[in-house]
Image (tube, rainbow, N blue to C red; front, top):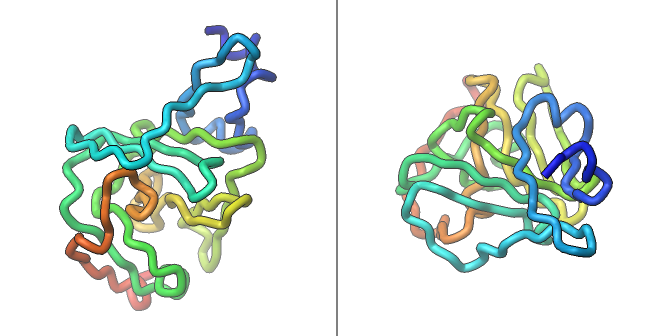
Length: 164
């Protein structure tokens, strides 16, 4: 598929700024020119290939990584308020794929503005972030990853309150 020729038909454009930083998965386009995205809700994937999404499905992501056996919680002012459990593994940007509807992906930064916290502007769910301590690498919100039960995972604690 010629991406540039079909660009208007592919509704997964985030923004010009994001295109330069991330690799985007391109959905298959049906006969009407609408993208087709396979649902992964409820599937458990032990192969190391993970897929996730926000609550409404407007922001989706995938990555390949080690088996998820524990999560990470941060004590910084933002993470302690959102209460999310993140991946312990930091994922290089070139291995983290993002697919989002037009204008659905929001960005929040604070303090030194090194970390980039992404969320769905439609449903408000925090989906992933680029880390402050390892720029160019992502952590995923494990609550958004299909087949991962964050209530069953052991949590490591990162002292972001004092170290960031």
